[in-house]
Length: 513
Picture 1 (cartoon, helix red, strand yellow):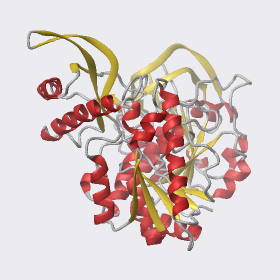
Picture 2 (cartoon, helix red, strand yellow):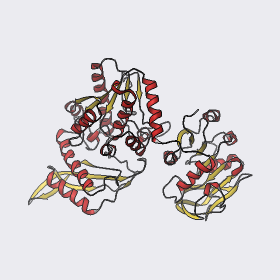
Picture 3 (spheres, helix red, strand yellow):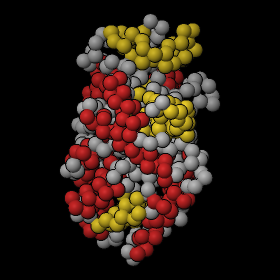
Picture 4 (cartoon, helix red, strand yellow):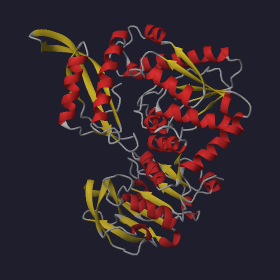
């Protein structure tokens, strides 16, 4: 049985699966994601308060499409089907799903037709919802009634309240659905009768207890980068086992400007942790000489990390566990199950298997970035550190396109520092989710001081996001961008052009490599 009340997200291959989980957690309800292939008997044993069926790219009437056992709807547990999940519920229970003559995609007006539906409490009679479907429920199953409709979708929502079965054709998890979060909240609190016990204080208490039980009197090495994730993970483990934790801070020579010294000061002086700083920059840069492929760079840096850990931990004697600041988006992007690998993360799939440790502790593995920040705040970590800009493990090595050299690292450090400084001066630090500079491998002609230059281009990247699974480019005021550009070109040698990246995620990733 689960320690927290929980809702299950049953994944049928929908692109918004992780987003559904994220929205559920925003309502202070813990959730787990499992494949549609999971046996119903296993799900029944877990004691879930509710089950959400995700969308998916298939047609439910195609024999090759993913299905679940119809007994899922006989568990007595409330079920909410979304898009494909709604169609699957209708299809398996005797309704009819047909190909639509008019495809609905994007923002669509939807009218609530059953005002007393628990699912639509405090939802306006007509609102905008996000649709994305080519099939539709043409005939509801016996015992179901239509609760909402759109112009081209006669069953935009339906339910059998007696059996606690609900279905929506639209996507409540997407921000474009005006009352989407209210619909999810109604399902969780009105229908599933959740109390909302997923709060950071309880997460910390539970996680600390689990770490103590797992580690006992053994020792842990933490891979500390100084970023938000590894910092919060380190403080969590330190809270659990104290001086049995040793943090190894590998300075690979590709950190942000002055960051190595700042990290050392915070954790050695402020938190009184056992900290070993390894200045391994020359070796890492030597290993990267001539390497231009981004995935290869990630693998080389990842292996360098673990080999350095091994060397340092051996000096400590017996160390049984390795702690890492892995978070949920890292796991997803590195590929899970049938998911495609978007990019490998050194703390997920890029490390060699022969790590030399008894086990790995990843206290943040199931959390999204903003949840990590909430944990950090709850732990008393200073605001400046909690809100520190996300920074990938490979550091500037993947923000330098092409070969990484000491000269390029120094150039990017200076440019990135200027960008971050001007964002802070403009009061935009908390309004933008992530912002950084990229040193491209492109050189172009410029004119400086009546002379011809042939120097590199710096790209500025800035995004807003709630979950780091999707992101939109940030609308930074032109005057701020102008100051950044002027300063970089005037103060950083070797740069004569600054550009701004206005690509969302997807189709791009947040990082350039």
